[in-house]
Length: 330
Image (tube, rainbow, N blue to C red; front, side, top):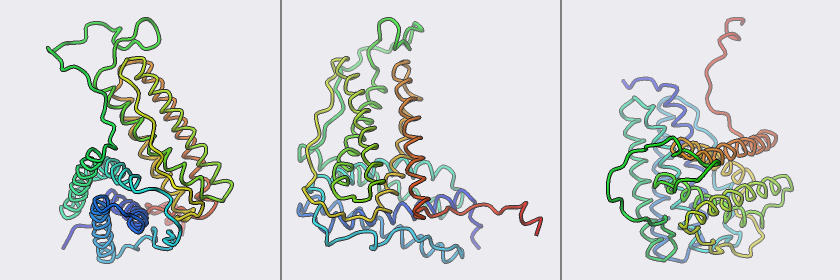
């Protein structure tokens, strides 16, 4: 007989169901409109992964006598709506999604101890690794991938000699190191994706409160891109090139408002995680200050999104521990 699931395993499985059902909706929508056969093959691969996860989770929840979450279904997408994005955005979506999912599921896997559940999550990490490789390769072949800045190879091993290595506001700043450049590049790339998403959704969302929320998100992403591009330019590393416009002129929403708000909630959560990671790896004080400021700003933005989801009764509640005090009084 299998061991009972721990709280970490229940939480990881529940989050995976919610995340996978949301991704299923989005990938199904992109596949419905896709014309490019090479991009379609990658979307098919992504959809197959989502279907496999959802099937496994439904069987497991039934076996463990745990209620299957409502999640998201075909009721949250409108396949009759005209395409909102051109084909390249679907490829960018899979690329961005696989990167974020690798982070999410790697974190979850570290807290799993039941062997069959470990196997499930390690398979998800492997699937997302394959998706990332395939989507990156196709982006490169289509000339759509903006590679990180290049620097000369190091000639020798060096050690930090002075405390001034961390200076960012006072005195002369040292050049960025490769770890800091990588985090800046990833931040800009992630926010370009967010701006494209916001641009499209702002054309189709009718609800005034949600529209204002998306505008605020677009502003936060623009602010990060402008600031970190300026940092790169000052280092003579060149900023990332402007985005290609991959949004059509459609004004009919293919997604439910609930799906849109949940997607942004998930993006906010991973963004806070990744900016926190960048903060932990950046020695220069100016970078640390920028990252700390953006974390605070995104936390406030996330709270606004949480309030909208709760007010509309759209936020499904994760499984929780029993209220022992209440039980003892009964």
